[in-house]
Length: 211
Image 1 (cartoon, rainbow, N blue to C red):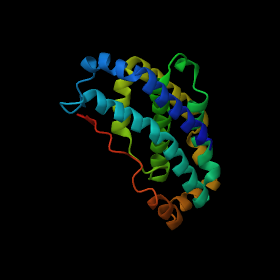
Image 2: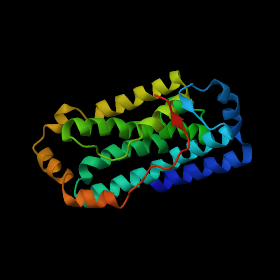
Image 3: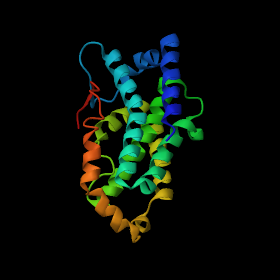
């Protein structure tokens, strides 16, 4: 996993934000138009949203590294790594529809793609294995990011995720003889022990969603 490159991208975007305040300016304009479901504290709304976006973006390389470590230790790297590489690819070589998006605002789009990919794959793994690939529920954070990005564009990003997952995984992927061995490993003590070293990948993001 080339999460070093992802971390470098995030640092560059944070430096750009420190110099230009582009994200802060964007949020100032966007705040009055946020979806009513997004609940913010009465004070420092802009600062809270900025912290949310930073934490959401910073979580991507940590999540990919943790998942890769667990997959390797549990002996399921060959099944998991292609999934993680696609999430990495969204950052390192984002799709054309992200052209022109810069700084933290642009990385929010890329982070959303990566998080949504993991979420979709988790849903597939729950369907076939009765448990997620990665025991991290980002549903609410992803819904908030969806609203921050904007409905129309976020829907385009969702389509890109669905296309990637459809190309990578289908029901036939889970009908192989090797999957039974994989299923046993998923419930093994080694897998559980490996994940216990990552007790909380999610951060306190400071934003709530009224569903």
